[in-house]
Image (tube, rainbow, N blue to C red; front, top):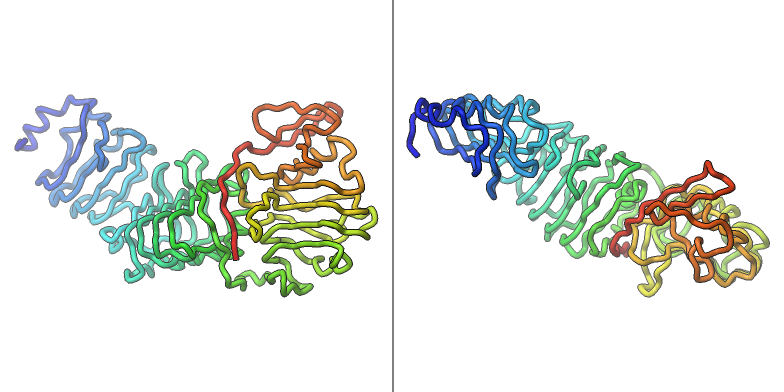
Length: 444
């Protein structure tokens, strides 16, 4: 349709709802006032497009214009158009803008080889529900130095389809703050065949801590790994994994925060984090004090066949402050418990007084904490079992049964698998999400 701006205004000025797609590109239009009444349109496969219009200076109608909330707006390469007031656009819209007279800097960024030259030195990136920061089709040969200024992302991050070997160009990122209403995959790193590690040891804060954080790391290099600092950060917020890839633990154990990490076979008394399965049995039970400073285990914890722990919680005795998480490192693939307390002669008390979040990552159909075949009765009533289960947010199997099967008060469920109500203590109510994740395995 080859019409003048006056003819366009005469034909479209009363149009309110367009039952079709709207794309404005490669035109000589100076403004889009003929769409002043337009309120909605449908969204094409490649989104809503305003691109390559060399004379365009005005798009005021967009302030009241709506598309489907999943529609991506592409406003690019309009050299006379000022789009810097992008935050005045409908909150439901997500878009990219680059190559205009003035772009919407540090907001809803979609970084590709085409848009990368226009990226500015952002310290904070924010945006809408769909985007915030997406990185695609980049490689190590490109100049990514401007990202060294980035410290905070207020929304979801997706990195996919790149040839990058690592993400250390974002190595000063400190805060990732997501809106729980944002789309699935708050941090999604997928289909990067050369990607071996993140390089995000600077990351200090991920929120919302009290709500679900979706983490997707899949289809990257087979040797992709997380550092202990990165794994700890995800564990502290009980991040939800949505893939079945095996995630390795990076072999480099030094940390920027100064915390000492040791492999179990070289454990020293000043180690706070231990990589490998911790197994306490009759052969080493008198040496448990070497674990007195340990706060994090990247592996299984097994206490079995001990003889001389006399009515003493081994974990209190050890001052075993597992205050954040236990991270899984499977050595024996047939095992499906991360914590196992089995066949101990005199052990009578089992407590995890400082463990505030469940083992990480969640695994489907796994009893995280198994207690069985001990000579002493660890849980005399159901409430004792439920109390530890609620405090640690960790499923317990006691002598082959769940806590709810033990003698005591009945469980009252409200839909989540770990909601319990004790009729004798009506002010006590423990909650735990019923969502479990597919297998994600930490290996060394």
